[in-house]
Length: 157
Image 1 (cartoon, helix red, strand yellow):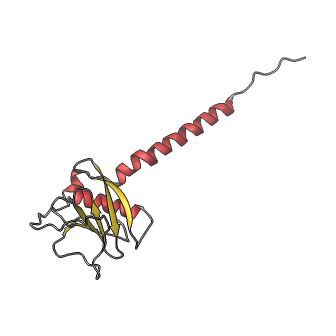
Image 2: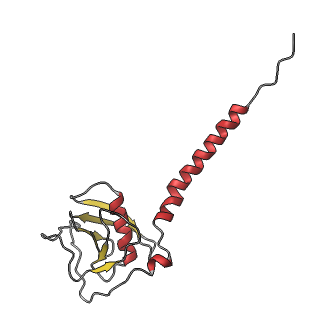
Image 3: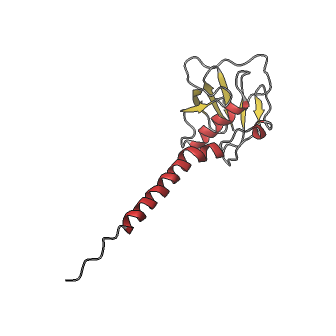
């Protein structure tokens, strides 16, 4: 009887390669891609403007947001520069002096990323300024008003 050829483990190396590529893809999708798409670098921050409002509007105490009947951005709101593009909600504005444009854009990103529209929704956003995660309650159709955090008010439209 002729000797048996040695067992081939080529399939094992192929499987290991596929698993490695899949793990790298997951890491890029979960950790790297959000950082790249939501880059709040100095270049993007330079395009935002911050306006101090002398009489900030108070956030609702009960956490329920009621948008203005005509759904327009209040004249006292400070418009922020966009740091990412979106066809549905293209702009954000801050409604209090304690709210930064960087945070307003993060709230806009989080609101756009979730699927509900028209009704009340809660989102979570990390402030690029403080590094703290805040819960925000949002409602509205054309102009979405989000309140929460430390008396933060953000308009997404």
